Image (cartoon, rainbow, N blue to C red; front, side):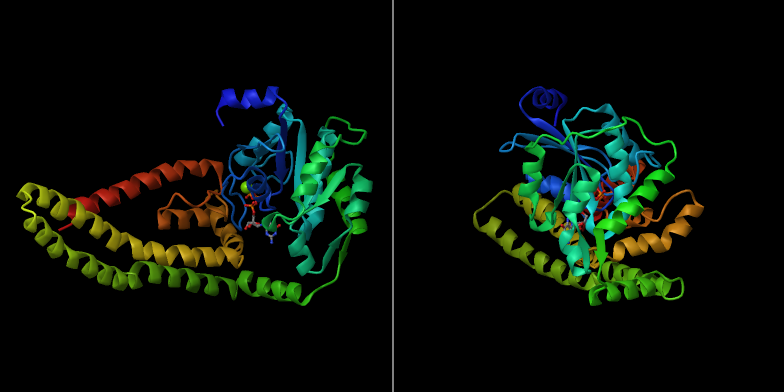
Length: 377
Ligand SMILES: Nc1nc2c(ncn2[C@@H]2O[C@H](COP(=O)(O)OP(=O)(O)OP(=O)(O)O)[C@@H](O)[C@H]2O)c(=O)[nH]1
Ligand SMILES: [Mg+2]
């Protein structure tokens, strides 16, 4: 949203609501569901790296989707974006989105924000996932303890969002707010642990046991690395080598139309320069680019999406974290490397600084495309 329209909504009857929370808890999913926008979502942390604005005309809400943060004491550029937005206080209300499957960790941020602001609504998301794993959250007890509105929802299925909107239109309850963070940060951890013990009940389900077992296999140094290397090598092989076969077939199919097109131009007595430009120039180039680029993309994207949906990408980031830390980076960077590999604009970038990588990626992409265009026979 442009700056002038931002201020138009701020000064009008629209209510500005910040969505904040730990990474990968569904903030952008809630944002998209409420605004109809298409912020990037995906099953790994650090997709949102800057704040995004959206409007819900019907409910007269301006929503701000912030990058994920574990605490108001930032450790990265994207956490600073969230901290600054909260401290700037240019909002009417804050929604802290939490993950119902690991509420204790999320409550640390909730408690910090409740010390800073009076206008807090807690949205406990991923209730469907918690139910699957046998985790029960007593939302009314949580609301009682925190002294603020708590709404449960499953944003991906659109459940509970109406109650969230209702809560946003309600006046926040009266409660004491110190207006500053506790000096001893371990205080928040202690309080979060205490609250979680009172409101979360865990009935270990078969699905949860299976997940823990998969975690042990996929992230242990003995089995995790060989599986990861085999999977990545498999994807690389399918994308780079195996894609040559459909590329070859596609190229033969597309070039087989060349003579038909030339004959068509001849039949209508088109001048040589027109058929030359359209068939030998435009058509051959497009056919060449499609034949070369389409099969690797059509193989890579579904495979990458499958890994994401199975929850394997965060495990890759976890496995590679130690290696990447040696060069001053973090495991999430491995996903960016996959972004560079697939040379696409579509994927999220895990670190605000990695915005620098994407323009380079685009330049490489353009160079490759130009080479293909000029070297095409
Ligand atoms: N099962 C389930 N999945 C959800 C729900 N809400 C979000 N997700 C999924 O959780 C993943 C993370 O969602 P995002 O909206 O990208 O999370 P985010 O908090 O914006 O993440 P960052 O921007 O990285 O901090 C995506 O794969 C969503 O589809 C939900 O209610 N239930
Ligand atoms: Mg997001």
